[in-house]
Amino acid sequence: MIKVYYYPRCTTCKRALKWLDDNGVECEKKHIVEEIPSLEELTAIYKKSGLPLKRFFNTSGLVYKNMGLKDKLADMSEEEQLKLLSSNGMLIKRPIVVGDDFVLVGFKEAEWSEKL
Image 1 (cartoon, rainbow, N blue to C red):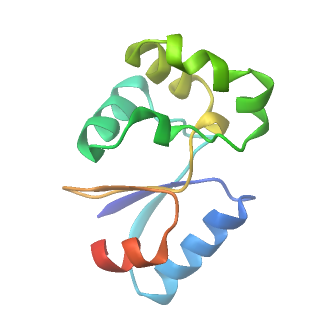
Image 2 (image 1 turned 180 degrees about the vertical axis):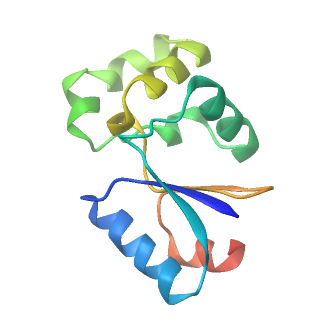
């Protein structure tokens, strides 16, 4: 069963969860702030995704902006970035869908239709 990391007040997450329901996709839902993925989980998700690590940051979020991460990420190692992500669920782009052999970051209906 796929896992979906989401934030309930996020409008994109609401649309994504509705899409999953409308399309009969069963999933295990994980509140990304109450159940922040551990460093080990995030590392595994990142490696499985094949995506650049920057894609996992919620670049439009207040926490990201308040921490000035736009200018700091380039000077941080992958491990430092992953530790930072695992320290605050609000830094993580959402929703994230984790399947057996794929990871989807953000909600793009066409991409979701193809994978799910």
